[in-house]
Length: 501
Ligand SMILES: Nc1ncnc2c1ncn2[C@@H]1O[C@H](COP(=O)(O)OP(=O)(O)O)[C@@H](O)[C@H]1O
Ligand SMILES: N[C@@H](CC(=O)OP(=O)(O)O)C(=O)O
Image (cartoon, rainbow, N blue to C red; front, side, top):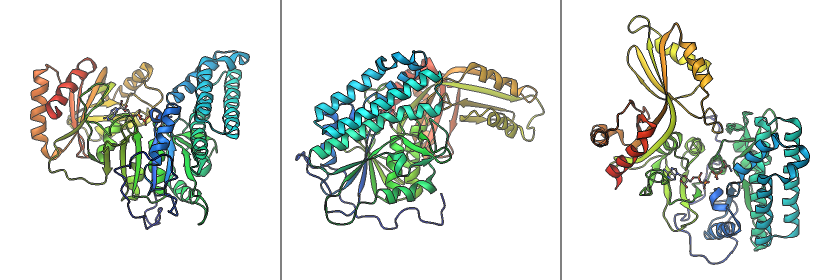
């Protein structure tokens, strides 16, 4: 971003309390006394899974009467996965049979049933039907072409958010709450043309979004903008792009940054960011506060609760907080993520597990301390387009781990690529790799490393878990331990018990 030119309005509106919604008072249009949007609220797939959940989301949105929210929605429930499945199956289905494909039928049934249950008007139902027809046509195209490019994949998954936002805006209007649906790719979310994991072009997007979301002049109702998460428009291709799985979190913070807001909220199905993944550690509990760096490390090392790039807009503009809330338990305080927090009492904040990681060991075959050894090693990774997660070095050797996700869509590093990597090292270094490793990442106060590591190694010793490699991040927020996949859940459980239970 260009540091010289302010990309956000210089004044931000005063903060009215956003930590506590008022009790459910029925659907009164919120924030109608305000000139402009004062908060962005994002609701993920689990929060908008069916008609009942959409009613609940409407109730939450209206429970902050002093705020005029812009609402960002993900696709309903598992719709994105169903769309991807439909694309894969269409590849092997005759064009004439595509209309009857099971995932397409499931998507059609869910959205038409939700429209009926929510009692939206006939025009809105027609809008949903039109999109469903276009979706079927795209699938027929995939079947005829026998090709599912990343570009087509992005167009395909875009239907999830385009449907959910239209239904929700229509429901609000039917309840007397003014609302207007927007497709993010039409209002200025401009991205690179890297389909399926595009990056936001902030220079182009921030001013465009600010302009597009400006509400009409005074007098008359103030429509709540309802915006598709996850989607953008490629700056060169002009085609629909996506921001990577879970990308609606990033849409939310991007809109907040564009509007210069003091706070945005991401509503999930858990009481905030938790001390560990609740699917592995049922005793995980909410973390009250995190810094942007901590939240980014946590997401990068595999906590699916936040998109790894979601903190970037908040960090760039400064002064904007990101609150993680539970749409199933609206009174839970959630987690507030901001630039700074008091670390005086912080020891270990969260434990994240990333499995199915490959570890590579490389040692120099030449003289000790050979000049440029590390540069040559990383040059090989750059040429192979492989991103490295964790690194530990000595003078003549380096161990590192490879991200299992080349993009967030394709989770497996292919064996051929690893063999290619080994071949690329021939003559420079001795290289070997081990698959089936896990990174256990402790988000912690590394000012207190000695205390933390003493406790960590006591626990792992007791559990007979052998650490294969370790690294302390320069970001001063994490310590990473590499262990075998089979030992990792046991190690995480024991470490969680040690630090949190
Ligand atoms: N450290 C963590 N804290 C909270 N949730 C986590 C954590 N690690 C993994 N998760 C998982 O992330 C889920 C929420 O993320 P996600 O499903 O992407 O939300 P949404 O679709 O609502 O945006 C939780 O249900 C939980 O299973
Ligand atoms: N629907 C997209 C984008 C997204 O952000 O979803 P969720 O908020 O449910 O993680 C996905 O499934 O990846």
